[in-house]
Image (cartoon, rainbow, N blue to C red; front, side, top):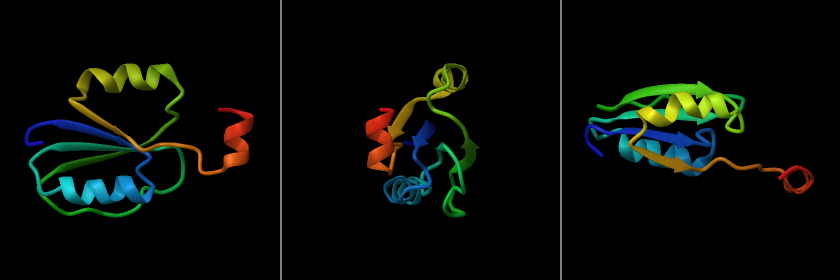
Length: 88
């Protein structure tokens, strides 16, 4: 992952947070994306870390991020099953 720009969605969740902890030992750029709330933890390491709060369903959001990305890990999802069934 050295030298890569990595985008991680759902960054306020457990899995994404664990991945960030693993990747921060690499000299890479990580962009953590959460839909709302707080991005979990401050991470220390050799990685460059950016945090974004944004709506993944908003196309212009992706139009600015995708050209920069080398790798995307998509962990975002609705935690409330009833809401997900109403509006998938």
